Image (tube, rainbow, N blue to C red; front, side, top):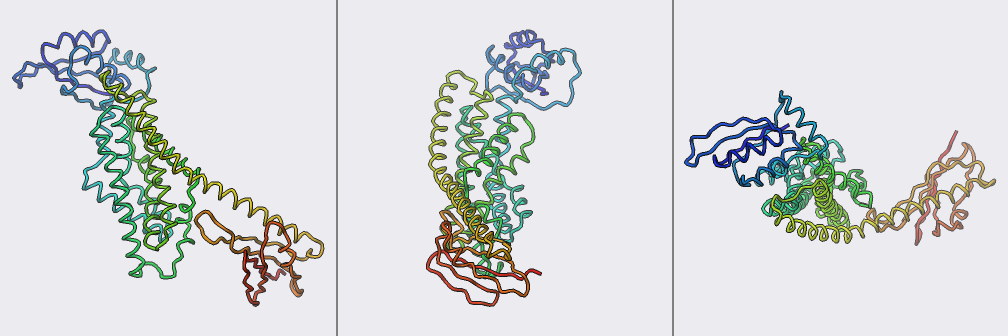
Length: 438
């Protein structure tokens, strides 16, 4: 529920009172004597879904849009009239007023200095967490990231035709991306050159980084969920802190991976993570924009509504085109995941079929691992590692030639005994490890 306070010219008092009485709204009225122009302050409680429509009715009777208006959240209202009013507006869409939405979107965006410091610190913490392979530290970076305000502010500014809010949201998003990449790259380079991380560190073996090197279509689910949840929470007037963490989850860790890729001189890593960041940010913007439009937010003046509608459509088209263009990369990654998954399944099935042969009845398949030339798609198999067990005290039969003959492998073979040499091949290498089993 909300408590609304309006400062209105005294000559508008009768029209306002009549409007509120027609709506059966209980109100109090106090004359304001501190102004040169005779004025009155009128206060009345409203259910949250009723605020926008009642204020619009008051605007229709001549209350200026820029008139002094205060809307605060009330704990309790004891009034039979209010109970009836709440029941009447219960069928309305559960959302806060346009004025409250605009104010909350502005409040979510901190001062520039605060935004800059918090963005830098969140990216530094995320990059450190990635290098340490610590999920807890990476999650901590999301908590302090101030990214929800600019993302939602741009969408709110679009639907209510607040150009200043839109421009500020876009500007801060762009600055956040640029500062985030530079910060992550500088910190990762410093960590690498000063010995903060081991010189032998293999970043492709870090699980927190691996998960962000192959952005596929499923990656969009996180961004869609973040955008919808963020906008829906904002329109409901509830805390957006937890949703801010979700939005940061889609943006901050990939920014850290971009910086690590730059610092390690791996453009493929930086490009893969950079695409993920851009797609996530664009999807968050368009989904939040769609939710706000679906919720019915429009500018107050009818002539602005047409302008806002055209502007929203243009911006939505631009976002969709950019998402589709970048999603082609995600589609390629998704296909690569399918292709490699099918290949791995075929290889595993062929190896199992070989070991099911009667002459290899004493062998037990323990594991089949396929190693690739590059962890960033498109990937090509470099080595097939087969681990088999054989009874103690026996000589294991050699299965290399049999594996080589299988259609899925198509490789020159090499057999490696526990103490034997590794024979290199010109194409995909097959390595067989033998383990004694008692």
